[in-house]
Image (cartoon, rainbow, N blue to C red; front, top):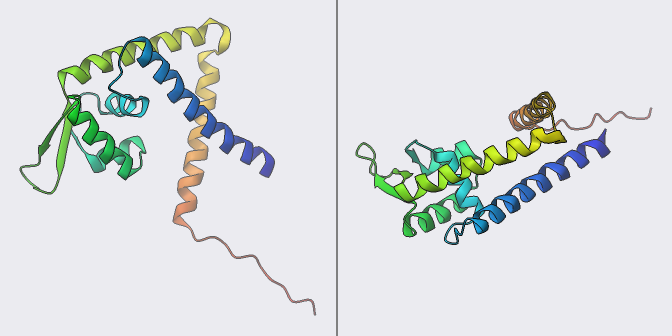
Length: 159
């Protein structure tokens, strides 16, 4: 079981990196040079919502320091509109600019193309559904291990 578990962890990590590489290649083909792959995914995950950086971190499972840096760069490059909350002056809300909405439309087209390619013999939809169910179970397992202290091994005396 341990060997399979470690292989799954490595695969998930590699798949994530590879997915980001594919997105970067697609952005390059589209001539989008002032946005990296992680930033494009952040924009895609924001979509039509208005979020705080904290909400974005929770929703997208990004590291907080990375989100703050990426939000700053995307504001500078005109992809995000940033406004202080009128209710809590410490909170900053971000939403997509028209420039970012155009990128999101292109991202949807990219993912539509990927999905179409997948159905051309690589995967059946039910296969991906099964993979997703398994990954959700693994996600729940990992989340559950955060709630419980690690069990210490039982030590028995050799009497």
